[in-house]
Length: 159
Figure (cartoon, rainbow, N blue to C red):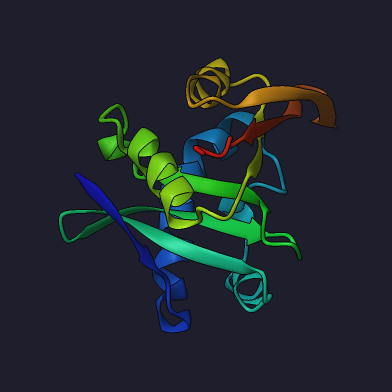
């Protein structure tokens, strides 16, 4: 069982560390300068201070094993998830699935969730599709061997 814990500004160094751990392998593969692995603490702080953005730790019992960021739109009914990073030592345990479900429950007013991932990472694409996300058809090439693919998930009212 996991939980989400809202990140405080004083805890950003731990988010920065988790980014390095979670995204090192993808950075090694693609050498993408826009990778969360390359994000500076100053850039992280700037994003943290934006009014419609918030970060959460992903916790397993009392241990912080990952993080995610939620970016709301002005209406509060559309949000973007990303990045979401989990310590590779705990991958394959359903943590990403639980975290995605929890973040949707945390923001019941959000009816449209958006995210992007690396097109060439078929495991990531499959994961998001399993979670109910559908490709929008938008693909943005970052470099010759790497493109971002965009996803959307619409939450239906349960009335």
